View 1 (cartoon, one colour):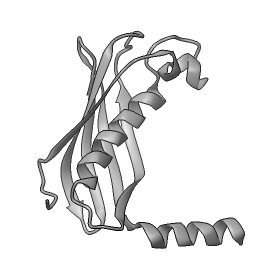
View 2 (cartoon, rainbow, N blue to C red; view 1 turned 135 degrees about the vertical axis):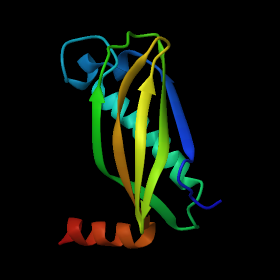
View 3 (cartoon, rainbow, N blue to C red; view 1 turned 45 degrees about the vertical axis):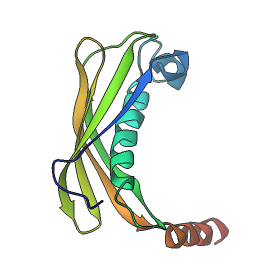
Length: 130
């Protein structure tokens, strides 16, 4: 399937202790942490993009610009949505949002870059060994 502007992907999770701000060391509060929210948003975008990748291709995140708008307690489900809003060569731009069972809790933009996995890993090996 080819990527097209307007395509949407979703990812969801039930907030547990491992996904709290307290667990990430990003504040001493036992609510859904911003790093977990961002990860969920990235996952929604990655899943959408991956559906259109050729064998040996994937995408990597290159930019995240989001606002965390509301706190979500442990035990509540969060759904992240990614909508493809721009394709610029290998660069994919998504509008991302996250909602809990009551309201919008975060939104922003996320960019991913289409890559050849073998070339990417080869460069990584050169950096690690060099």
